[in-house]
Image 1 (cartoon, each protein chain N blue to C red):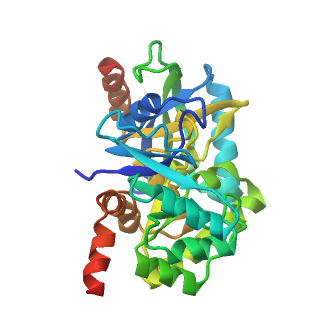
Image 2 (cartoon, each protein chain N blue to C red):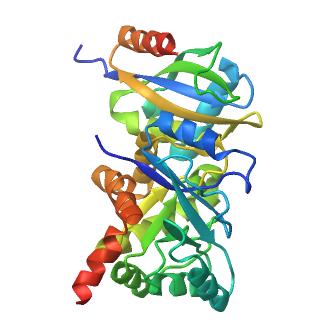
Length: 222
Length: 121
């Protein structure tokens, strides 16, 4: 039995859903654990149970502020995510080995950009690239087509450079949570094979939580 | 049997803000399939809503209304239909979340699955 993880879930105080409710539904859907990644706030990551991981999603527009915040949160959280979007933020986040996840690199509306060079940084630094399926669900017609196109492009590059893709729901309420099998079906919309999607839902997130990828990298450097 | 196409029966579960009736849900399923796969894709998937029922007392333990239904589709389109179901975001402005809990090749098996799920709760 594989352990599935959803590493980008928002909960109270950012939304009006409590962590316990989110976890209850996620457990029912078949997840082994979720990480609460509220924007710039780690107050609600206290371990209520072994299935909840404390995380943070840094959201900023300037690189210097990003650096400062990474320094502030590094070591205090299990999952350090950066809210991607603009090119300079994406680049700064992927170059920093302290970052675990670059959340929605193509932005929540598919406006961001990710180049070959940047994906290579991600592979070198062990930063996972997040595909938030919530963007596909919430958008319609031309917006959805644009988001899918972006995701397809980024995923192709990620596959080429062996960067780590993960898929998350970016859920803000219990209705936003998506069961693992549904996640896999949605990921196939932008060209992810079933095995890759399973890997992106179970093995890679688990490695992030255990900091396995960072360790592997350190060994390589020595 | 040769000329008949193989079908699958998806048993799905719905959590929603308020109670949802079959007609609204069906409309939303169609809308989702159309928007994701277009007219041709929708015709190929052969979707048919067999039944949908509200669950009287939910078992998630939180304050949401729950329902359960059976949807028929072409056997080779199961993953596509699953994605379309997952894409349903709201029904008449009420937030919903849908997931498939089981798949069967016969309607009898699907009803048995539904009954099993209901007795569990």
